[in-house]
Image (cartoon, rainbow, N blue to C red):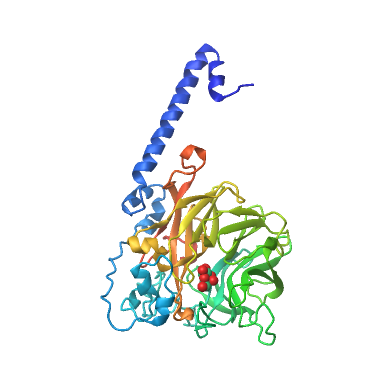
Length: 465
Ligand code: GAL
């Protein structure tokens, strides 16, 4: 047996030795060129290298034509700053984040534009079918959509998309002085759509429990980030969600189940998965039908990932610790060409921060951090994930390597008025940073989220025919 590849080359017949050495040197040359290319072209995601990534997806060029955002000018200090805004200041705040959190800021209209913008059929004309990230999004009844921290399930049986999320249409208040802004639990909102653009309100599919103050779903508790997956074996729709008390000390996950995607879901209970604290979370169903729970743990310092039981109603004993010490939350997982990708945020409560993309060959790890996926806008926009926080990444059927990045632009002054920032996410081109493993050669593609003030799904998207 050969001890090494080079050793093998030496033991070949003379005729073949030359061609084998040429092959080795060509390979080394190619790898060096690749390394050089990735170093030259991927310094810090400033936007100028966007053109490079266009070539492989001709039909998606429009999605990758990013828009530059005008630089935001911070107004001179004047008048009263909201005392609550001062308290909510995250540790490493920038002045723009301060403005974002200040409900009296003169820049408020930039982050939370007031003009109502329908997505849905009642606004025809030139503006139809466009997504306007950050504007108010309406359902088919003309009411603002309440599906925050949500995710989308494609139901094959009914060929319908279901969007589930936190129904937050109640008053924002502080349970105590130092607590985060909150809205009492109302339940999980559900909206259905055939085209990902027209959303019909299907009502609250898992409601708060009014009669029992000790129940997980009591309105004084916390229900966040609900996600639904379909179990092909049991034929049940299974919802996983973050369950907590108002102080975020319970740190658990809850499970609910339904025979139909539009509910009602029956709540089965909560647990600390693998005996660990669990806050921001998501579930991911792999191609082979195995589903995984991913959650922030050890006081949000790391993520845990582990497969669910076959019926998706529980975790198993298998759990891996990933991104240890990186303090990431809001995990959103997706898969492309056999590689697993994930977008996460930092941990600054409702305040926006920098997103990171991660990749792994095996879903249980090791996971590598690839860098900030945001492209376009301006630097401040990119460093604040376009003033939003990841919640889900939805594959765009028929457009290989293309996804919709779903994020929440939280409005801590009035959480019900938090906005949705959906943007095209494309996996293509080499990763930005040399990676820890694999001799520093990036094995994975870059994940890019392209900023647009308005955008629409590609021409020919079947839902729009
Ligand atoms: C964020 C988290 C949200 C919510 C919020 C409360 O860090 O991602 O889901 O829990 O904190 O402040």
